[in-house]
Image (cartoon, rainbow, N blue to C red):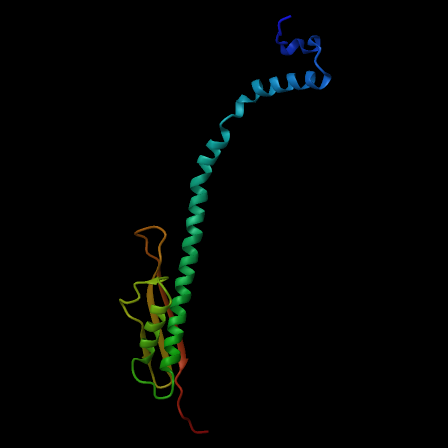
Length: 158
């Protein structure tokens, strides 16, 4: 007796177990009716991916800008701390800020032009550091400028 295939609609007549008789029609329905949404996930991903990438690059750029600001502020504070000492030589603040920026890595770019500047008055020191943050997008510049202030150490009478 040759082996014959049992059609899906007549599975009950082929002597198949009850579990298989229930699975065969369900599988057939799923294979034939489920084709309406086929390929929807790649299309949804293609629509959402530019927005996801934009948010990713924006968050990375924001983090790089904050690190560059922090680097500039720390360099300015370091310059103020060097320049405010009692009888500090002229240019000590700028030299300390430059030394800090060289050691801090490349988060702040373009700080060499203009170089960090420190202004010393009779009672106060102000140091300013300018530059740009690293950019994720080529050709786009994000300027950074940070200033620190401090009082000059001096002898006073009571």
